[in-house]
Image (cartoon, rainbow over all chains, first blue to last red; front, side):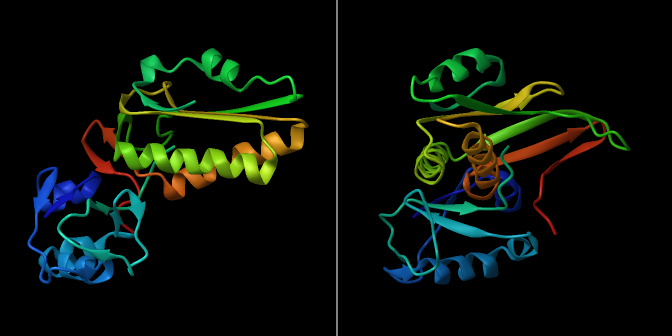
Length: 79
Length: 137
């Protein structure tokens, strides 16, 4: 699947999009986030790091498959 | 009016017009502008990046919340994307309500919520480097 990257997540991982192989065909967004943190430990040093699934802030319980649009959401700073 | 656009395209008068309503005696407008750092590192510019479809949908949620919570008739939010120099506009929020208190409160709620929920990221550029704002504790 492809994971969209923004802000400092782009700097940490490199590029605008991360090609990512899900460890299971379906897993929760919190499991996916934990795996991303293991692969990219710098993510854990941020003030916050979360996922959006299909354009909505994830609470961790969402089921994620390779058909979903997933984005990494580092600390937001609009305004 | 919910939009993301280049700062030079942001037209405050047009945004105010977009919330005018015969049912409202108050329009409150918040304008966020880019400021220099009064001490230390001189800010040369800001750069705003967005996850655009989600940013628009989160801004629409905020506008709807302001209508529900503060009985606003119309709410417009326009945020800059791309480069912004010192003095330029980063965000404009306009809220119209029947009476003034609700428009002040609704506008404040909108900017506070925007900072928490809308996927927009700000990079500050200094003469000697740059950083993504709020990224690290």
